[in-house]
Amino acid sequence: MFPIVVKNLSLVINKKILLNNLTCELTSHGITVIMGPNGAGKSLFVRCLHGLSKPTDGSILYGNVPVGAVTRGRQSMVFQSPKLLRRSVIENLRFVANLNKKNNQNLTGLLKETDLSLLKDQQVSTLSGGEKQRLSLTRALVSNPEILFLDEATSSLDPRSVSIIESLLKEKKLKNLKIILITHDINQAKRIADDIIFMNNGKISETGLANDFFLNPQSQEAKAFLKGDLIIQ
Image (cartoon, rainbow, N blue to C red; front, side):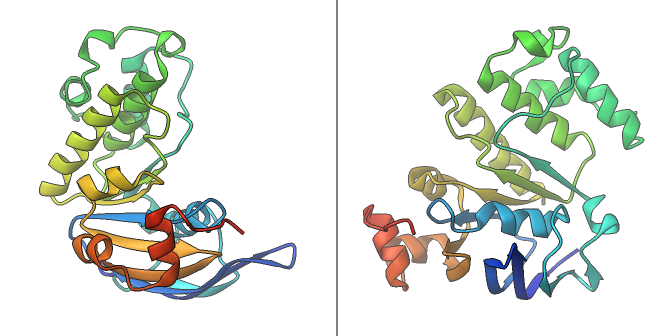
């Protein structure tokens, strides 16, 4: 699955260039955080990486395997808005376990990791927003993915849920789960990122190690973003 090589990736919809000639390479190590202002193309880029959107031009290779059904089967994704079944907490996990033939997965143990053990028989409709998103993350981990995508998965959540999710991501990183996460939260990126992809206007403006990026950003767009001065086009 690694390295993930993106070469000359473009996406055009209704004659509008939304992703413009993206090229980068991601290794299996750590947490990659994708940052940039609204409309930068971050979510579209991740959708292409996950195989949900088909680029107009360019390529994505996982090792030597093109993005597609094979690569997507070894990945999971958590969206900004939780997408859950109208069932109990544990039934949501069992559904994914059956779908992926992971019936030997320790579902109770996964719930414990996201502090949902006491809610396992509760209906999803009764959960808070933070609990629903923690369940979304738990469910994404049932298939034991090699790569986990998160698209603004902690935005607007309560601090406790954010802390639980960040702690779990750090723990899973140490167990060789590759994590690719979109966030607008600069402080969150500083807490968990190993490397950064910074996007603006459908282009990659800068990539690099997180410490280097925050201490000495190279692009004018990144400098302006970190200062809160970047004007969204």
